[in-house]
Image: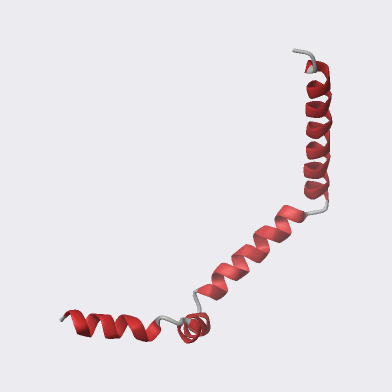
Length: 72
């Protein structure tokens, strides 16, 4: 192959950039913060307020009842 050295250079530089990004995210506490936000989000999604909001924003909430009564 003619450009093997070029592809190897790109692969090495890409790996170094990706590794430095991961190192930065670990050192700044990015993953800890994301884990905390995700747990808060999941805890909120299980509350009655979240269920009421999902039900209120569901555009198909009335269609399920109509379809069930038609098929009976």
